[in-house]
Image (tube, rainbow, N blue to C red):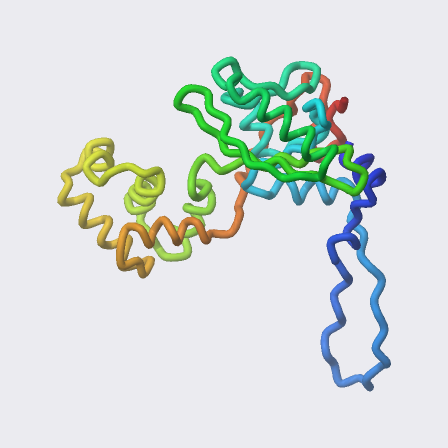
Amino acid sequence: MLDSIARTEGLTASTVGFRQPRPALTSAPARAHQDTAPVRLDASEFTEILEELDTGVIVCSETGRLAQANNVARRELLRGQPLAVDDTGLLYLAEGAQGALRQWQAALRAATLSHHRQMLALSDGPQRLMVSVMPLGRQGRWALVMLGRRQPAPDLAVEMLGSLYALTSAEQQVLVGLLAGQRVEAIACERGVTVATLRSQVGSLREKLGAARLEDLVRLAAGLPPMSSVLRSPPLWADARSPDGGQARAA
């Protein structure tokens, strides 16, 4: 499906400016400047790029018929709160999120028909998901739905950060709790340590990461580069093939 979208809309690597790298400087005589030919990535390579993003990316039609969903998006859709997909590949809102149905439908129409961008808050009880709906391609056939993050930084990024700054396992767990918005007292209770011990670990965290305040830790997490989990969510349909082995069933 991604291949057909790319062909239909003319979405090639050259469209977004991918070019062949220039050769390294050597002692050879300088040659006249020549533009290099654009590098064109195939559909499987574009799919792999989407898989590595830690932001949910969905491509669908005006009616919400799913064409493509990356790993993070598949995990969100399988969760089904508040956005889900049925066994025919149609996106729908969970029962508790039906209050936003008209806005959701209007946003898809606006993206595909009018090339307008919108942001929505989809809520299913305490479960809230921020999404942006944008036009994709020149012909207005597809909507690009970007899903907001559930947490400031993915677990893998925090783990890599811990390795980079030599954080202990306990300090990493404390950092995860702080980034999730937990209070120091709650983290201490959860981990079975005293508040004094927890505060000592927070102090060590701040020193190692160069954060003067707890708020600086959140800003640091927001600036981490995208790192998606190496674990891949399963296909959304029983007869769909894995992302690296072909395309999912399409509308």
